[in-house]
Image (cartoon, rainbow, N blue to C red):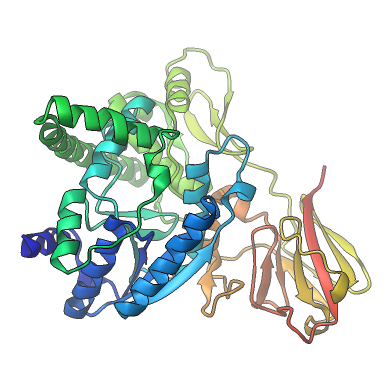
Length: 469
């Protein structure tokens, strides 16, 4: 039984492709089994593992005790361990749920940890999660790709996500742990509360089905696998169609100006709706620079505008403050104002504010003792560690910098991707530099490790950025 569990874990992931794997470790049975399994496989395939625990600040004492348990477990098992606190309650955006916010904050931290294609993040989703996800996506009206969105390997915001346990049930994982003489793991009491849709599906719907129609679970797993194969075929067919239109337009999907890629209306109209929805998703990825999942309303609106007979130009609300433009011949991203100077020198000690494109950048000099650490509205540097003049410019392909708290350089493009900054906006965001290459702040997005405040700091330069009216 134990050998079969390890075999299923190895089946769908080529572990030799990776030199380091971070493991999302909550302390529950699934993530505990994942830590133990990958620790064993790391010796066989020679990759490094680090367990990462997120303390979400949601369950008071229980949450803190989970962190203590995870820390001790990793120490006993000689597994490298990292722990991060994320303040979900205070980071909630308008209209965002607790679970969505937690996922967003975790992904942001994962994107800071993962630097290259040889590093991945492993999560403990298992067979039961596939069924819960299937029900959740059914309620949202998802297509087969959405219904089977839990995949063994997927890239999200530039981070490779591995799910080695998808072919194993929770019962399999608990049996595996007991077979390794591990009989203790954490139980999240909030999973028993039916406040969230996922818990209702797990605790009520699936539990009732298991009780009243025992064969249902096996049939639903088989249906999931069949849908997954259908989705794989449709996605590959759509990708081939998308590449074909790019070839006909003599465009590479790797072009630096992806936001300028437009799609012929007549081409889209002639596609089957199932293929068209997926072609649009590949296109959205290229013009935005990250994986954007369109909702049903957006796809329905696009389909309506593609099939209208008038020659009127229409703008469809898209992502944040951007629009899709539909005319008689083309579907394209409605461009933002690109009237931005390429670079300028800022004598910031003498001139407290400077305009750059649509933005106003300001600096205030304050004593360290009176510093208000409001990182939402700006950033702080050690005044005496900054040069007298700074360069403001826009992003250049190939730019790299060391993010705050990091030790290695990261591509600015990866930061944009992780923060979901649309491609057409990236060339407008001011970048603050000490010289032509050393970046200290991607304004409003991420600061670097340069001129960090320490115990010796006496005077602080506080920089902020705002959009001009």
